[in-house]
Image (cartoon, rainbow, N blue to C red; front, side, top):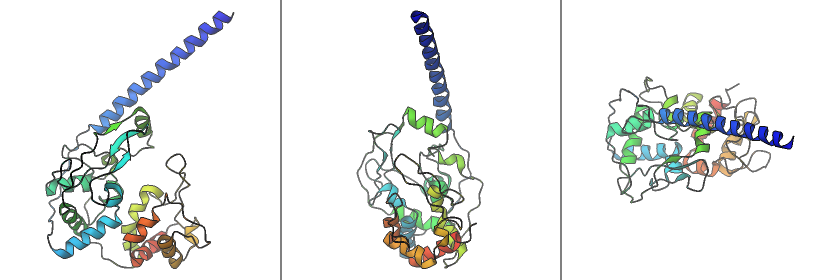
Length: 292
C-alpha cells in the first residue's frame, strides 16, 4: 500500500515538474519574442537647439522627469537589479560618450525617448519612456536632448542585461514593465509646446510622470514589491484629495503630511523637493484635485 502511494506521489510530482517546465518554456519564448520584436516607426525630425537657455531648460526637464534618478548624477547609469537579485541583471545605460556609454545621433535620441526603442528598433528594457519622455512637447524634448548630449564623457562599463526566470514570469504576467515600447502609441503626434502656468493643464503635463507608480488613474494601490508600502490614491477619493495646495507643496518639500506623519522614502519626495518649483507643484495639485 505504501509503495503504491509513493508511486502515485512520484507520478504526480513528476507530472507537475513537466507541466512547470512546459509553462516556463512558453514564458521564455513569449518574453524573448516580445524583447526581440522589431518596431517600424516613423521617426520625428526634431530640431535640437544649442543655446544656453535651452540647456538650462533641458537640465530642468531632466530633473523633473527623473533622468538622474535612474541614470545617476553623472548619467553613467546605475543598477536597477544587480547580480544578487533573482529578477534580472539590469543597469540603466551610461548616457555619456565615455567608455561603455552610448553613441547616439539626434534621431537615436528621438527613437529612445519618444518610442522607447534602441538603435536596433527593439524595445529598451525597463525604460519609463511611456510616462517620462514620450509625452514631452517638441520644445522640451529638443532641450532635453541638447542637455543630455552635452554631458561630459564618463568611462563606466555596465554588465550585460539579463532577465532571470522570476523576472520572465513577472514580465509575462504584467508585474514587471520590462518592455516599454509595447505600451507607447507610436503614431501619436506630440504637441509643440505646453505653456508653463499654475493651472491644471500644465499640471496634467507634469503629473504624467507620477502615473508610473500611482497608476494611469492616480488611484494608487499595493506596493510594487516586497516590503514596499501601499501607494497613495492622489485623487479626490484619497487622503491627498483632502489636502490644500499648501499642504501638498509642504508635504513634497518636507516629507511630512498635514497630520505630521512622515512620508515613506519609497516615495522620492527628497528628490522631488530639489527639482520641482513651488509653482510646478501647485499646478500638479490643481490637476490631481480635479480627478474624481
